[in-house]
Image (tube, rainbow, N blue to C red; front, side, top):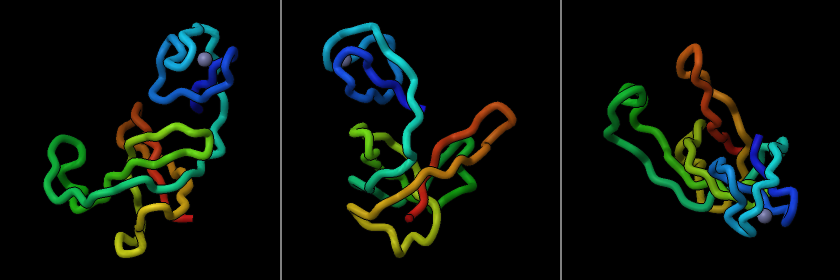
Length: 106
Ligand SMILES: [Zn+2]
């Protein structure tokens, strides 16, 4: 789910209470199609906290089809990952109460 402004129709990410484009507070949650393209990425070799055992992993900026950019992770074959490649969302449960949207190559 991502936010969309009911006045200017632009999508919004990260979530907030006022549209950053027109300052309207008429904002709704809409279902994303869960697809986008890799804008940029890097491989993380050192991490801490809940991700310390996951290294190496790929952190990426993904441009969703709705026009917003999000920081996420790309899972799958690292050698196949490249800028502009198409990706789709896959949800990973880290804890009982924490699910994060990662992406995999289409
Ligand atoms: Zn707006």
